Length: 322
View 1 (spheres, rainbow, N blue to C red):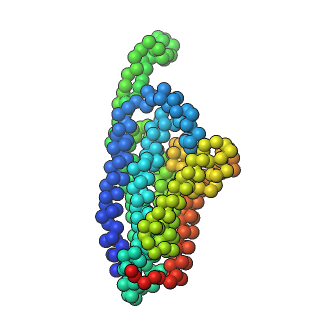
View 2 (cartoon, rainbow, N blue to C red):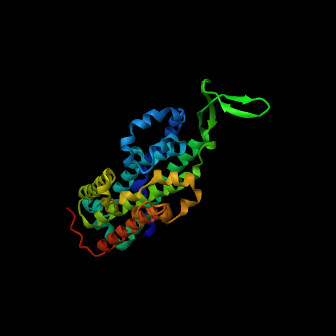
């Protein structure tokens, strides 16, 4: 029966997964290809115009004039977040309230199957699908770095005879030289950011399953999860707006989603990619966690939500089908 349930959830989700996988694999490569067509230092005057918005960014805006910084924004792109949230919300809210809404839960439970098995099989398929989607994003970044070159400006230098000194020539025109991106940025710098994206998806998935286990109508479960995400997004924006609003930061799980900051940290100090704590470099108590610390917070939230979902679903009285 366990195998039958796995097959059922696999068949229900495979076409959605394939559609999202196609987008998430090619989007990072296309984005990196687009970025590689420009010499980033030319955007310095534009970055200066957005200095007022730097407080909303987890890293200094100058970071986006580096290739690892501009590639790291991929994990904050609306397309990437929308695809991951679509998978987590659509699959998470379907497991209980979706079956009840369609009137198929009674037929499932009429088989020799326990309720915990339904959630377990669904979790195996859905979490595996989420992990593969995040892996495809990383593969897209990896291929984008290794298959693209970018123009880098170089100045002609004066060489002083006999002394061998090289001095920049301020009158010379900048020359653009094509350099492989793999010489400027390493794919390993994005492992923590990919894991952070997975942990965010797992947290949303757990909240979706929990909402589904309490409800009878799928549309209401979807609305609850979207409402929770939007509320956390608003609190996160408020916590960034002014120093006085920073008190809201601990109350939103989105403050644990910091892929840009992780990319910058790993680029500067590669060993800190696996740190649980960053207390030595923290400016205040809210920045004491390291990359693995932020990831564990979101994973813990997802596990807590799943625990509540198992507890509720195994004890609730299910309504009769409409």
